[in-house]
Image (cartoon, rainbow, N blue to C red; front, side, top):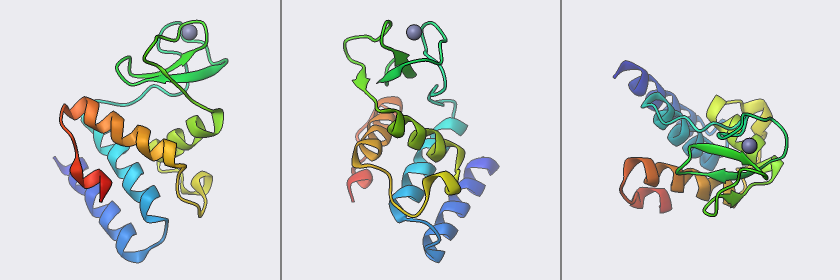
Length: 127
Ligand SMILES: [Zn+2]
């Protein structure tokens, strides 16, 4: 899996050079590795109706963001700033992410996303 390998090498290189906050590198790596494996969260439009307005919830089982009208009971509230951070982590947009690590809620969503789609707890996410 050359793309996974290049992503891993890139993440390890960025960690060793400390060019970005370690949590940002970790969260971005996890989201991008899962995306390469086929589990890309849909973050720009509602997974039900496709609207780009009022994307205020995230449903991990449904695969992405939901508008207020379509939200399901398990969907979690998602602030627009959190959605923007998830987009930046997924894209590896370091300019957008800046020098601060992601919000704790965003990191938790990334871990929950990974554990849901990998179907196992990831103890290393909590180290
Ligand atoms: Zn909708």
